Length: 244
Length: 75
Image 1 (tube, each protein chain N blue to C red):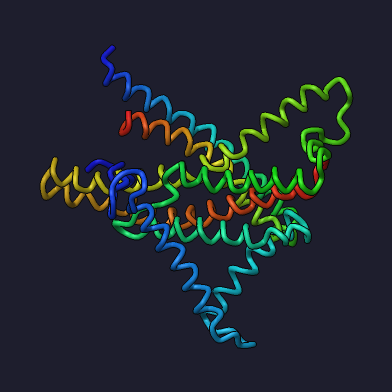
Image 2 (image 1 turned 90 degrees about the horizontal axis):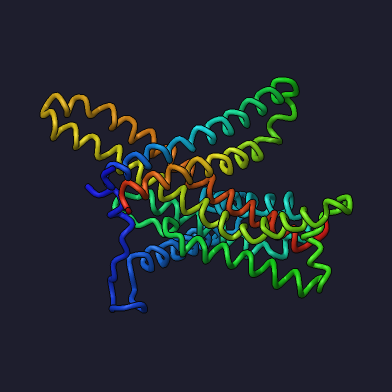
């Protein structure tokens, strides 16, 4: 009944650092599910969309409107990156909600890798597009001179902490949510073991809590994917328009 | 003090951080409701921002819960 047993990485094929693990398996499943979902959705390409086509168009429009609202119309050049990130995080989170499944995004190295893709894109694109003027993201407009050193220092620290906060937010939500589910489910068995039949009747209370938390976890899975996407768009907006 | 006892005490203290997140989340919903009741026609457009603010604030509470869980199960 160890609640963190579910996050254990096991090697399925091969040994050592290059082995194919359960994490890799669920990443492959996630990508296959996304490709399958979009392929099925876009198969008919009819003017009046069916169920699958509606879903595919809905996900496209959802991400596209987020990008347009937070990064502007020229942010749409990053749409493939943002859409891939959103779909990968969303599907990985939702796959983790299946019983006995492994949650890919509950490991910080995975979310940190995703966050570093975003931050590297911002730094490389910013310097290629704006040259040294990109450094103006550390100098907000309209700050009086004597405050400038302090504000620049704060902006630099805030920029450096972005990949950490972006990755830890997603990973911590997934990890804490799944552990909480396991702990509450463990109460049912614990009450049964401690009090016998009476404990089994009392176990309805933690069981109801587990059901409610499962619903909440589906909500969190979606919201965290959305927050990851939205913050990516806001950071990309910095690279597109530095000095605002 | 016994190291095991200190671990459980520390886990309990770590969860206190969630109180701050609770105040923050409550503040967000209170502000949203106050604004939405004054101007209901503008409320729907701000719903994504509500969810965004909620998720960012709630994450801070999750961080302290994470510390508590790591102390309980991983240390």
